[in-house]
Image: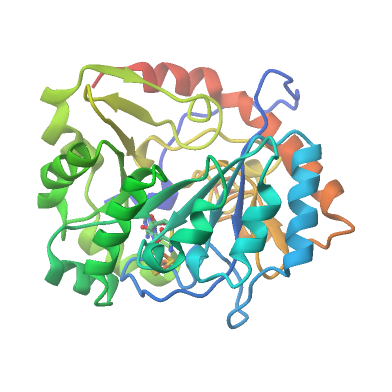
Length: 339
Ligand SMILES: C[S@@+](CC[C@H](N)C(=O)[O-])C[C@H]1O[C@@H](n2cnc3c(N)ncnc32)[C@H](O)[C@@H]1O
Ligand code: SF4
Ligand code: SF4
C-alpha cells in the first residue's frame, strides 16, 4: 500500500512566476488546541500544531490579526481547533467580525452548539460545519471517545433551525463506511451539504491509517447513481486538494480524495521532505502558539508570528500560495473527469 504522504504525482517544471489570476487563499485559524473529544484518528490537538498545553489566541491579538487579513483583502476565514466552541473569547471575536467583508466559517464537533447558540447567532452570515462520522451512538462513542452523541445531534438540529449550518464533515474509514447512505439521508432531511474526507496519516497515527483507510472511490460508488451534475468551487479550482462537488439535486456531496494529491508551490513543496504529500497548500494556518504555516504537514516551514510581524509574514505566505498555480493545468484536467 502506498503511504498517503508519499503519493506519486507527475513531475511539474520548476518555475517561479507569481500569478495575479488566483484569488487570495482563505486563512485557517486554529484558535485553540484543546478539545473535549479524543477522536481516535485525530492528531493530538487537531489542527493546532504546538506542543504547549492548552493555548489559545489572546483576544486583542486575534482581533488585530483579523483586521490585517481584512485589510489585505482576505475573503474567508475558517476557525478550527482543537475545538473552537471551547474558546473563552469566541463571543468577542465573532462580534469583532460583524460588518467586515469576510466570510467566517467554524469547524466544530458540535457538542457545544446548544450551550453557545446565542453567541453563534450573534454573527450574521456565520456558517458552521459539524463533524459527524456515524449515526450509531455506540460507534460514535468508540470513534470520538466521548458520550456526547445526543448533544451533537441536538446541536445540529438547533443550528439547522437557526440557518447556521453549512454542512456535515465525515471522515470515512473502515469503521463507518456503512454510514455513507445514512448520512446522505440525514443531510437530505435537513437540507444541508455533506463532505466525505479520507483519512490522512501522521507519524503517530500511521498504524491507524494502515488499518482503517478507505479509498474514496468506494464512497463515490455508493452514491454515484444519485448525481445530477458535478461542480467545483473556486477554492478547489485553485488551492488544496482537487475536489469534486456532486450535486444530488437537493444537497451537495463533496469528496476529499487525497490520492489525487494537490497543487504545489515549488517555493515550499520543492524543498519539503514530505513531497509529494497527502495534503497540500489549502490555506495558511495560524496556530495558537503564534506560528503561521503553509499546510498541515509542512511543520518545518512554520514561522513565528506576533501582531507586529503578522502583516509581513502573511503576505509572504500569500506569495507562496500564488505560486501554487504552477500545477493547476494538470489538476484541472484531472478533476474535470467524471469517474
Ligand atoms: C481537527 S478537527 C478541528 C475542529 C473540530 N474539533 C472538529 O472536529 O470539527 C477538523 C476536521 O479534521 C478532521 N480530521 C481529524 N483528524 C483527521 C484525520 N486523521 N484524517 C482526516 N480528517 C481528520 C476532523 O474529523 C474534523 O472534521
Ligand atoms: S473533535 Fe475535532 S479536534 Fe477534537 S479530537 Fe475530534 S477531530 Fe480532533
Ligand atoms: S510543504 Fe506541505 S503541501 Fe507542500 S509537500 Fe510539504 S507537506 Fe505537502
